Length: 128
Image (cartoon, rainbow, N blue to C red; front, top):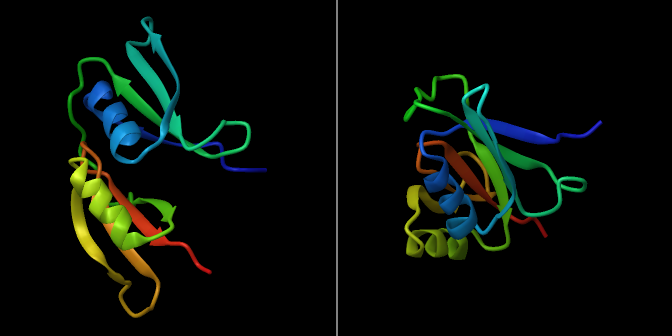
């Protein structure tokens, strides 16, 4: 078994695709409208779905925002350099929720950014 994707609902699909591709550097892997169900799915990620886990962006037509709820935590991305990644994301218009630095009660370097719908994304420094 392996993780295929994580699905999140988004209010503006084009805005979300722009964030995940232009700000976080992912690729739009596929996108399809489902007129009978009144929704569109877009899959983004850093590599082919056959080899990598990806994010499914679900846009339900006519719904422009969601309550994120208290059960969802965050998505996590490994980065080479947390400080540089946060600055690059900020320079591309991304919102930094937590500046880079050691995690609470630990030494792992992390930062948090938010996607356009407010989903938190943790940047975790690559372990050597």
